[in-house]
Amino acid sequence: MPTHPTDLASQVPSANSALLDLPGCGPLASPLGSGRGLRQQVFERIRAQGAVARVDVAKDLGVSPASVTTICADLIEMGLIRELALSRKDGDLGRGRPPVALGVNPGARYVAGLKLSDLSHAAVILDFAGDVVGRASVLRPKLNLDAKDVAEEADCVLGLALEDAGLDRSALSAVGVGLPGLIRHDIGTVIWSPIIRERNVPFAALLSRRLGLVTLIDNDANLLALSELWFGVGRSLSTFVMVTVERGLGMGFVLDNALWRGSYGVGMEFGHIKVQLDGALCRCGQRGCLEAYVADYALAREASTALDWDGGAEGDSQRTLIESLYAEARAGNEAARSIFQRAGRYLALGLATITNLLDPPLIILSGDRMRYDQIYPEAAMVEMRGLTLGADRDTPRVEVHAWSAWDWARGAAAEALRETTDALFKVG
Image (tube, rainbow, N blue to C red; front, side):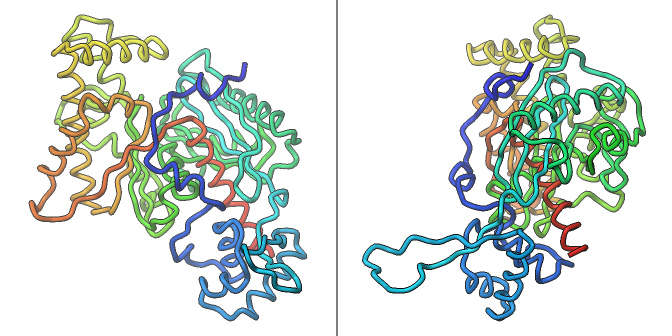
């Protein structure tokens, strides 16, 4: 059965809520990307602004108003943009035609985004302007399944979202899918994922056959970073880092308005940098990974040692255990507090490593675990600064942002929007 957002994900106040209310979608910072023709740049500038005059598009892109006028006439004829009449300013009694802006025709194309995870799946449908027109979520009965069974679950939640949007599947141009694990976005392969039993699965092709649609897959943390780039605080930044803390530990790196995945497409595996030789066992099968000291299952393991609790709990049972551990910590249980504090110190070590290597202007912390920020964040931030090379250097701004399954799914849909737009202008 579909669930409501409040059933699926806990919410925390967001530092970027004002930016989320801005019109349009996509990066506001220049440049919008290399290798794009002028027609695509004009279209993407219009979509990013929501509603904008031709003269302002020309000014933003540094081209002549005549060029923009010609291109916009073509885009209107293609049905991709439309003219929007603007209200006159108070006191403006001018004659003639009211001021006109340009906006994306939302019904020109539709895309979908899916977030697949251990406990639940979520899907959103976006129009071509980037607005959500439908969504759905389902809870998972099992944690680890064959790839074909996960594809069936994805098909189910997509169908529910399409039903909510009142659209047929044929209306979709592409689907973006985010899932945890080591994902080769470029070739559509899941090398390893905690939610799929097999390894080295050509999952994008499997999903594409099942859904009957162009399908792109990526690591879920990458796509949450893309969500920030298209819909959140990242719209006004060209470079930032997203770190996710929940059942696993993930990272997405936006560089010059684009995700940076590494030479072979599997970089930014923040949770699997080694912090202890022959250390704690990670769910990836290796030992000493940062994730094995910070993620939910790490807290459950520590609780089993320090408090003699059942550390082998999974799924909802593990979530209940973490909630109980948090309650104990808030009530003053020193053993419980020390578990969170130790995780915070390891997180600080990881954040300092990011700072020393990448020197980003902003690190965004997100994920279900950030609800526990009363236990360790300030001390963790102090420790991060202490572990950063150069006592007098500027360190990145660190912000905690809201978490919900819809944010992750919308990032996946943004990837589908990008793919659809690129394909359209390559042909057009």
